[in-house]
Image 1 (cartoon, helix red, strand yellow):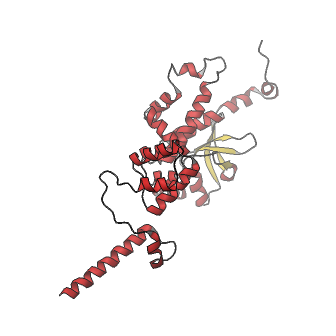
Image 2: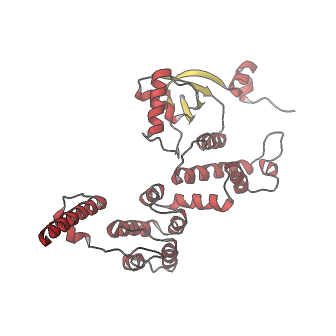
Image 3: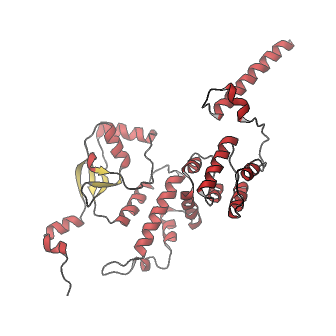
Length: 303
């Protein structure tokens, strides 16, 4: 005989049914906290400006998705941009769907709802895929009441295979994205900014954090990034315990395939001509303008 739980003893059937059902209500935005380690960035881009304008004119048209917190208040699952827009236009409340979700269910729903966005950064995919895959593996390792284990429901497929089918990526591509979570923030930002492509970034993710920091400083000082072949070589030296600043400089100085020949002027020779903090791009633009003026002056002298 199944004994009633503590919840069953001290709650009515109506209360238990309501707890398992979702419902919509207006909630104070101050009662809603962000999802822990939310991998998707809320940026002030064109889409955000459109959302702000829409919320100002019409309010939040699509309710956010939240779950109740055991300590009180609510946790945002989907709707961080709508919440920020509400705050910026002075809204005190926003409509929300309140759904009863476990921790792993919340992670999966949060990732799935945000992956519908048009533009997703590599870093966002990296942490989102990692969070969802870990949640799927935990679910696969436990049994459901009066049901078969989730692992059996996968029908022999791995969690990564299932995730790949859901998001339209190969298993190898998912593995590559998850490797990006091992990069230090500065290098990961370079991947987001398309300064480093996926394949070399994956190779660099195997370096230690200290080695990555040295690499980042080298890339900044030399104004260059490694090719895929150079990244493989850097990883090899790291695995052999022979990677240091001199080795990095030597590898980065190698000419890349189909690389256009470049003139390099050490930064310390240029610093005295520019204010402190001048960017590399600004220096280049100023030098080019100065050379154009010099060329015009020389041509006028020849006449």
